[in-house]
Amino acid sequence: MKLDFTYDQLPARVVFGIGAFDKLEAEVARLKLKKLLVLSTPGQQKLAVAAAERLRGRCAGIHAKAVMHVPVEVAETACAEVQRLGADGVVAIGGGSTIGLGKAIALETALPIIAVPTTYAGSEMTPIYGLTEGGQKKTGRDARVLPKAVIYDPLFTLDLPVAVSGPSGMNAIAHCVEALYAENANPVISALAEQGIAALANGLPRIAARPADIEARCQALYGAWLAGIALGSVGMALHHKLCHTLGGSFNLPHAETHTIVLPHAAAYNAAAAPDAMVRVAQALGAGDAAGGLYDLAVSIGARIALREIGMREDDLEKAAEIATRDPYYNPRRVDQAAIRDLLVDAYHGRRPRSVT
Ligand code: NAD
Image (cartoon, rainbow, N blue to C red; front, side, top):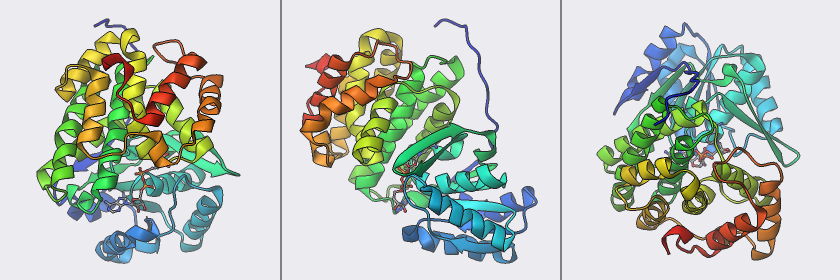
């Protein structure tokens, strides 16, 4: 491994473990917060109520209105609620959508966030925010949106349905895979990424077989934490660009799109990033990175074809054009015809080309 890198380490406080949610009040006291607004989606309001009950006098209110991709109107309403209640911090309990709403508030008000993630998306470990206006999602980086404390309690993931858990975990694995061949990769993040893949590859099949397996839930959430660090610390490449294109321009579901595209993106980059692929394969316990990722997706019962999640065959050319228009760094040159082939394979759910 070539040791020549620049590494910006992000600040983080993480409380991890079964029952870690019991430490919420201690984290609030540590940050000297007195009036917290608790955020969730409408579907997870029960958790927000549980948090409010724990916080008692320190809870300013519950705002269970988080939705996917943080529309600006939703962010503005939440900011107005923060103002109205005089909140001095937010507790965001949920997946990337709820934590994303917390970040939108922090961006506007600089209030501290305590995040309690309940999926494997990893947003809680990144200074990246996203806001959607007029159907266009804009993302940016700002230190203000990085949560001041993150409470990972595997008990909160027990309700995550198998059909959501698997793709959410594959989304996390995608962060790790791309971290290993990032333009600004560094040995610390690469080690975490490799360990993240191993933990998720260990946990996800066991969750698919037995969703209430708390030890498997611990492994997957631990892997998701490491994946979140990787996502927040180094740049992502072709795979994330393709998924942003498919999600943003064709409205495909976030985590499932990641699951389907990842083996094909890995196959595309295999020859250009051989060391990264060896590490991915080792972490998966597979002979080949792309094939191992594909087999993992199949083994957890995830959908493996873009046509199964709403992509139209007629749009593949357009998707290839958009995804190559303004490419991110990628270890292999991004070529529109080759990307179209990749998307055709992903559309049909074929085994990635490097292993056929
Ligand atoms: P999500 O937050 O939209 O959650 C999906 C659904 O599952 C929601 O209805 C939610 O209420 C429900 N849910 C979540 N956890 C649950 C649980 N434990 N039990 C039962 N139901 C549960 O999905 P996500 O994949 O976590 O997040 C996706 C969003 O996050 C996207 O908008 C993506 O762009 C963003 N994201 C941002 C970053 C970042 O760094 N900024 C990183 C990853 C993802």
